[in-house]
Image (cartoon, rainbow, N blue to C red; front, side, top):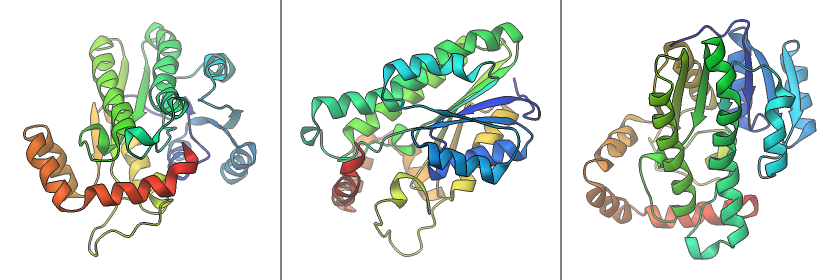
Length: 267
């Protein structure tokens, strides 16, 4: 069931990053009170200074299970959850320590699931609410050199789809949003890798608009990617071997290795 955002309380995780900030701005512009959470207090304060009223700040590290467990009560009554926080987790499996794998799973998959588990019962009781999970096009399109990251994003897609079926007719909507590489902000922008000329990437504002649209129109899945990548992701569901072979020929493994090198410190 679609809901209006004006007057709602929306918890946004990862609000200190470029995508999270854009999402917070978009929700705020629609009249929501934004409960913004992230690890860096200074960045959260900058967001509050920018948006003004209807902003509450909660410093939290989603890699810390105790902090995840305490976040719902700190956020109080929440009618919208946007689980946006994520770690890049790029690189071949053997390059990860066991602790790095656990951290990626905790932030990218476990935390959204636990927050949904804690927040959704009250939404169901009220008969209104929405849960948004920001996945990635990697949640539909596997690529070389991204096995850990892709596992978390495929998992998030499956979780959202099944939870949406569970909550059907409850008044609570569930959506998954699948951005591709994003220009100017987010994990890809941090790598400084140049894509071929003519490839136009979505902006953070495009992702934010997709989140708002998913909530207001109760859309189950929304892709935010160039047309070509959306077509390839669709084809991957039918002929994954063909798509993987084509991606290898186009140098996807080399690009993934460059990304892994640039993002290694963020694991």
